[in-house]
Length: 187
Image (cartoon, rainbow, N blue to C red; front, side, top):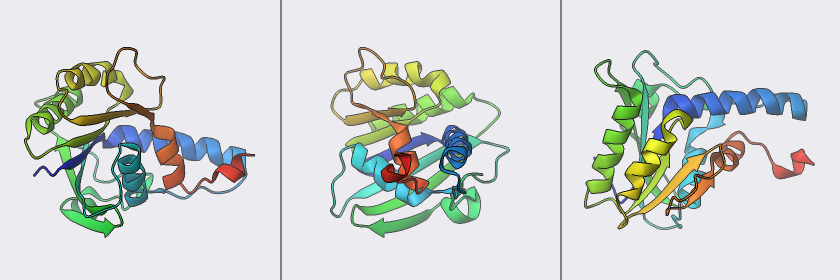
């Protein structure tokens, strides 16, 4: 399942952030903001995580609540028909999309951390881009800190966590680009 590059994301968190940005920017810009382009966002996350153009392989793992069938603020959106086991190729290589529901037997935080631990211990994984919900971001950072032999980037909408030895990036830049919001529109 793993490739050299992995984007591990809490899909419900991504969807919530996209919704909040859409609502705020529609008011600010005075125009409709379309759903975010998930593939474009994957490119932005990969670039912010240090990936460069080439024949790379990246797995984009979306963990979501069991009751959710689709992302509400992204295209493509349907977990079963448009995302799971689908792929796209561009100048950064091939991206394979995978979506997994969080079953009732485990919390989203525990499932996310278990998935992160599996990626961190997988020999083939060299680079991780990690997007957890803010509620368990500190626990994810603690898990990240246990491994130093992989490139890991933590994405968030909050201030960087103090003491984390791995790079931290603002998720908002990738989201705004995926939503088609250009810097010149912001004045």
